[in-house]
Amino acid sequence: MKKLLLIGAVAAIGYVVYRQVTANQAEEDLWNDATSTVRDTETAVKDAKVVASDVNQVREDAAKAFGGKVDDPRQDAAEAFGGKIEN
Image (tube, rainbow, N blue to C red; front, side, top):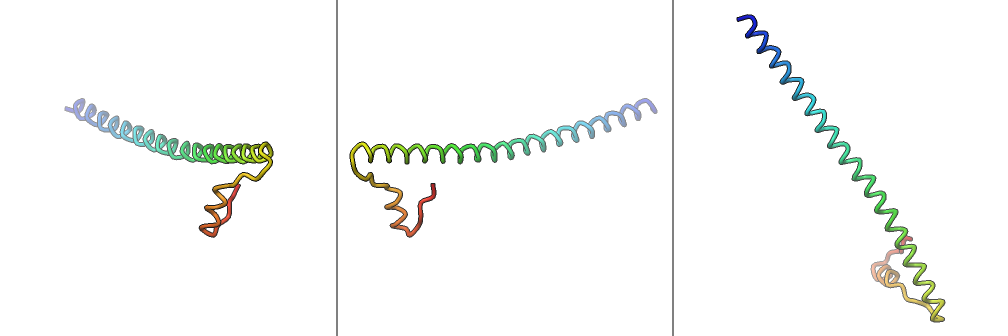
């Protein structure tokens, strides 16, 4: 009978340890997902700024090539809504 109780106690302790380990792993996975999303967002913002810079350069090159000013549709939108354009 003592062996049976001992086996039951060891099994219960093993189950508790297993649950704790899986809970810790789930929390670690959650934090990894959350922090990787922030890094991905920061990278996307940097990439968007690079693209915006490239678009502005192409617009300036086109204006020089055609000897005039190329209208900026963002400026029109900003003026319509009373805002400013951030580069």
